Length: 81
Image 1 (cartoon, rainbow, N blue to C red):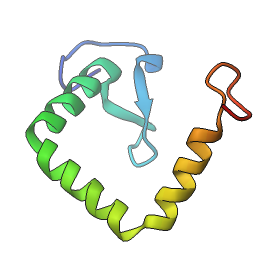
Image 2: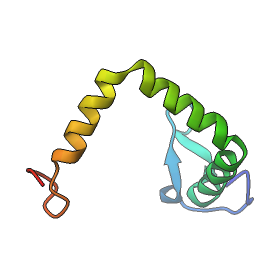
Image 3: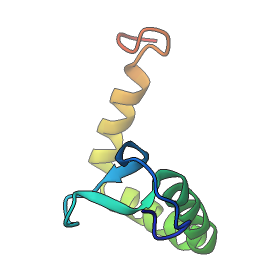
């Protein structure tokens, strides 16, 4: 049962979470998505600030990520653009 919408739903509508007793999150995917969107709205400036700070402190990781990302072919999923 989802603790947010209080509906009883099958396990395939819940995300896995290893820290819980049954291995599933307490909120269904739909409620979890909604909560994540609301959290992002409330904390957007802090999230962006932290991401920019991390990028500034980890230029090698950012460079490697961009290298991998931009080398992928969007149609086939591999190869060069």
